[in-house]
Amino acid sequence: MKNVILPILLFFAFCFILVFDASAHPSWAIAVDAQNRIYVSDLERVWKIDADGRVSIFAEKHTHELTFDRDGNLLGEEMHYEPSTQKFSASLWRITPQGEFSYILARTETPPKGISNWKNEAGAAFYFGQTETKPKEFYLLKRNPNGTVKVLFGDERKALADRQIVPHSFGGMSFAADGALFFKNSESIWKAAPDDKISVVADKQKLSAVSPNPMLFGLTVDAENNVFTADYNSKSIIKIAPDKKISIFYQSEKDWTPTGVYARDKNLYVLENKNLPPRSNPITRVRKIAADGKVSTVATVGETQTNAPANSNQNSSISANQNQSSNKTCAAVGLAFIAGLISSEICRLRFS
Image 1 (cartoon, rainbow, N blue to C red):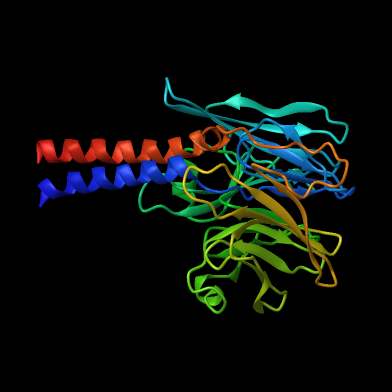
Image 2 (image 1 turned 180 degrees about the horizontal axis):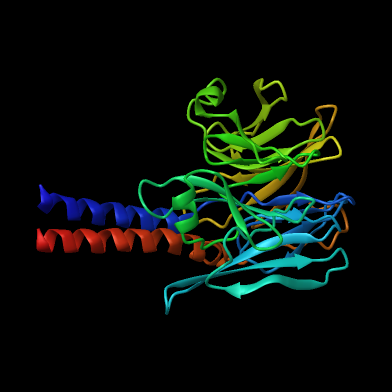
């Protein structure tokens, strides 16, 4: 039996490399400011879409999440991977409405425990992660302004012992108007009330009413406390009302899959990724769902930006190498895991 295990591992490692080299994971980062300017990330660049639909490169950053602080500054993180040392590092950055860039957290291989861009009115930061050791478990950390860290969700001992590599959450967070924090993994959504009490908003069993096998990405909460999340597998935006009623709010067209969502001024903005063959350059678009239910395409970012307004100076394309470069860091995480798994199995077989 043991002679079969290693070839199986190698086979899955090879498949893993092919998948991650082709697509890694899609971005869920989208944010909209008070002037209706939209910011999205494709994991290599942060793009800005003006209110009239013009698209431009806003920042050359490998960013997974975008949000705003109380002063209207755009906040994001940046991940780095150095192949020569096989080490990861991360930073947190801020860009003012005037375009001035600065680091909140300088590039480091050891981010402070619980650090993130998601902060409440009191300045406490929140980080939702998953343990490296098996069995993998999720946890939510609250980092107070004085640097103390509290575990709000998950096993306290495992959460505090876990090595935090990234400063972004596990697929999406959102604050409600009352300060409550909504957070999620790929199949469940929770709420951390202002008093830190945790409750379940929707789990896999409840979501199965509209999606038999949910894979949740982006998350947002509107002014009426409706929760919206992008479900990759059902290609839809799921809505959870304050009374916990679950429904499909928006269904993507067959060639598109939603990954990000953002509520602003009774409008819902959806970040979609086009379904393309492996190794294709990524194409994303933003759709707007108005309060009256009207759906419109705001802009498309990809090989050819075909919906630019007349006489605009919209950027024409993403470079041919972007698909590979945008996924290097994310793919490296998975490849490092596979390499460790194979190494461990080789040692086990050698000495067993």
